[in-house]
Length: 417
Image (cartoon, rainbow, N blue to C red; front, side, top):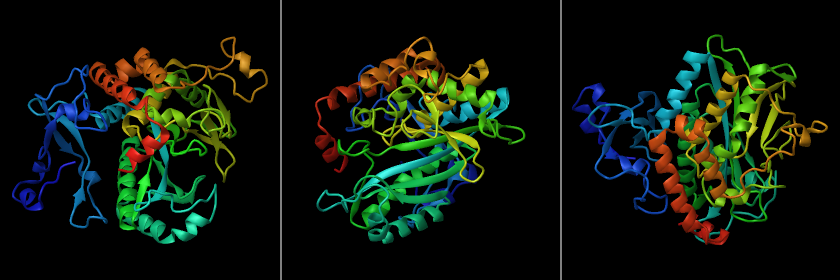
């Protein structure tokens, strides 16, 4: 992020909001998350610069920094004006336009952001409550109220805030958006607001996926469905059954799910949260309303009809534009190829019905997930593109090597710095 004084903007015409800021391109694809340190093998260097083309519809005054406004933007080559191959927001936006224009498919996306409130002075949770308690809701009423008010002031579509399964753990539920780029923007802005309000109350917000091996951890769950890009009608289901397109969408995601985790679960710590009994799923499969499977097909509480799917294999260490985009791209591929949906994990005999054997396990380590991503041409070559794929894999593998000797306690300590 960079800050431009308002008086500088007022000296120029409206179009000059674009290209006010520039930054070395390597900062968007070649640096590790824990240091200002370029990684070898990314194919990037510090000689190339990108500029920011703003998206004026995202302009918001920040209620936690009232003299500041924030606007999202896309990365452009400084000289040619072409979209940078390292711009995750543009990659997702291009996917949305291609799906609508070539296939008449549009996407709906919702999100659930989990985090823990930690006393900044002690490093301990604000309480020791368990799932679905009222302790955190009652004792942190002031924090929750201010958080909601500040989200409202930024037009962030908060549907629900509720207590989760660990001490001081909360979940912010964001309503469905018909524009996945908007939803990813909302995720970024909501997390920024959570961090700022936490600071106001003397807390730190911990988004680390696995902070205690006895707790489920923090996820960033996404809810997805599809609709007709022209009429807006749902294409995901008809009553209590998935449509052919809805089935193909789910199967497309399942076929690429191991590779998707290379983007959606991109740290060593991420994979500590995955496994049997962790509320995330441990094998590649789906079922209706089962919170212990990788892909949960969900019913509408009011209509009782199936209307979307949920995936919990995503957390706040991921780039949401890439992780959500990978899921949507995989689902779209399934629709284009008209693939048949494998049997539900609840269907009798389903463990051996698909491809002659039991369902494949999800990657259990980051190394397995990154190998799966690299081998998946749909995602590594056609979605990410060769340049971003190379840089992304190099950076994540470098981070993996460093993190491989860290304990959960080490990770928590670093996350709270």
